[in-house]
Image 1 (spheres, rainbow, N blue to C red):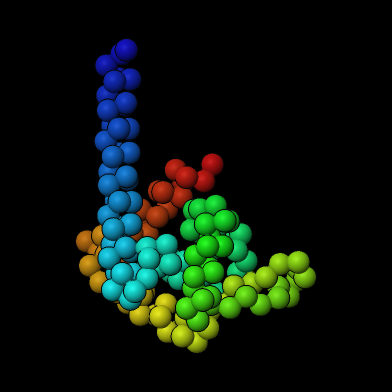
Image 2 (cartoon, one colour):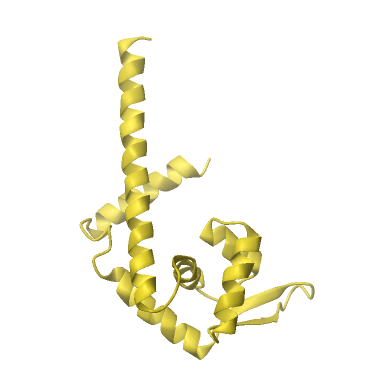
Amino acid sequence: MSDERETRAQADRELCGLVNGLAKQIEAHVRVRAATLGLTASQGVALRELTGPMTLRELAERMSCEPSNATFVADRLEEQGYLERHPHPGNRRAKQLVLTPAGAELRERLLELLAEDSPLAPLSHDEQDALQRLLVRAVVR
């Protein structure tokens, strides 16, 4: 293997390690913050991602999980009174997930907690924007 190829491979490994390390830090942060509210990490991610009415499939995509996993999480949030299923206005076979007032309040508390000591906090707003643009370029092909 050429020196240039080995150097590139080492740089790729290091970058992958950094991205993986950041992902683990973010997951741990969500887990700890969600637990303070009596939620699982998956419930915390679901609440973070529920920015408005959406289908289970949309939620699963945002959570980066299978629809069956999102269904399980949504069922628990519904049992706890944080989520309701409403008829979808454009597709009578689909349901939309909608936060209840208690769910919206819990989501706001969670977002406040997630903002505290976030793994991304050391980055300025401009640096976070730059990181997001670079990650989108790397992920979306």
